[in-house]
Length: 373
Image (cartoon, rainbow, N blue to C red):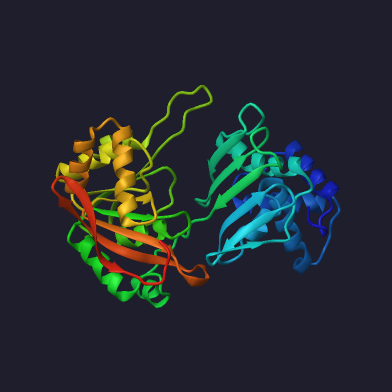
């Protein structure tokens, strides 16, 4: 709790809102309700002091409490809570510890429950983890006792809704002009593209740029676990997975959505990330004439991306020879992202995928020297 806002004031505002009509989920509605409740509690301040008080109380009534301040700061892409007394952010590619804290573990859990509860999520000892999509598209993951020892661990990932232009990507060093020319040509040639990299290297940002470059006449079917991508393309159909209900039924996974997409007359299928057996359905889409498909995978290099995809295909039940042959036939280009000196993220390698017999091989077309994949 921030020193400027007494805990008892937040509790009184919360009780007053609960006893009335409550407030909607919209930020403006929440703040309007909080402002009215504060006035009813006898709080009268000049507008310059009232506005930040309303915002802070609203953060504790309907949001993530002190974390909301961090989420509003420019350049913050991740907020990491390692227990009530330790909060970190990733800002411009660098991890930094903040002075934000919670009163105790219960305060962390209360903040998480405030935002996941209205979305059907729960976290307690019988289900000590939760994954939720927030209204702004950010993803929240939380883990609590008994599977963590030092208090709840919360991971928040923010996604930039902007589609960053090639000029900005080149000027910032994220995608040098030589690499940009290669990947833009791959999109224009309807190559099947896999973007790989570790967490936080910019896979989603680059994939969004690539999808925005497709021919406006192309019908793009976009499949994601969460709506992270906001590509600027004229003909876009979006589909999202669905977790099981509290009764354990009704789940819809990536593989199911890929099979549905094949019946929707797609020109291109884009899968936000492949991480399991759904790769078999993605490969089937690629080798049955759906050119120009794109996806991402967690792997550090182009070679590792092919190995990871091969492993997923084996888990899906494909024989080794079939998995390798399909990869060699289906994937055209792998773009690997990594981090350079000082934490800057960007494209490290662009590789063409060729067949060595029936085995897929990544042949580097461009590589950045001095950067880690």
